[in-house]
Length: 324
Image (cartoon, rainbow, N blue to C red):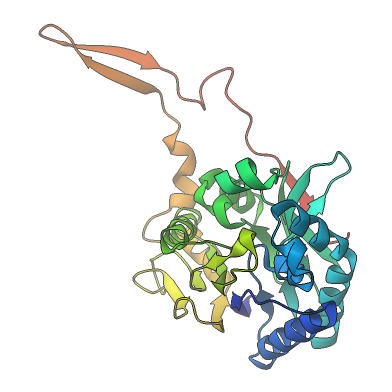
């Protein structure tokens, strides 16, 4: 399958009164995406946290809200799996906190396929809020997920601002990067948006962003949510001049739909006006510091990371065959 329709949610964080009320809301959203003909529906980062609204007292506490939402983990996954199967649609569930066996809490986004298979990605890079106030830890692997539409990577929010994560996924075969996000200012949205478009350009692939939207004063961890869903590609060939394939009206609950031809990735990587995906390794040349000396330049050479013996290893990819 090369031609797909993706639906990215501008998803409102709302105070639900029960798990059943949340399930009814999610079902309505996924049914709308399926009615739009979507192959894949994408929900934002930490969308699961609205479940904390079931207990307002615990929702008001950063640690207690995590504990409460983690109690719903299995049921949360089951609802998404059932919807994917019933509606014949792939779903990237809104990410949720997961406690690992060593006690760490990670931010996990799980992809559900209609045949019951799944794959996931834990957020790698923690924001200051996550690491300094909320106690969320970074994941320890970058994953490539094999799906019915081809290999897919996930770069959660802040992750897409760091090029090597999506780069590792693209080099392993990803033609589509999914970016669920949650940002509490428009500046935060633009940081993620700029990162998403940069990753699409340098990897000559598609990147789709799904943000949370709306005010939730009852939930301190997600009290303000700004953003617009969008689908982006490299500005080249048959792509739009600005690389923006689809873009929603900021801060309004909605589905944003884009039709994507995955075959275009191969075409652009093979014969684009420029070839940044292929030419990426050519950046790794020796680095020099040029200092002004007395009457002449004194050049001090420093080896680039790629040439140094003690250079960090390239990011490792866990190849998920969608069989969890």
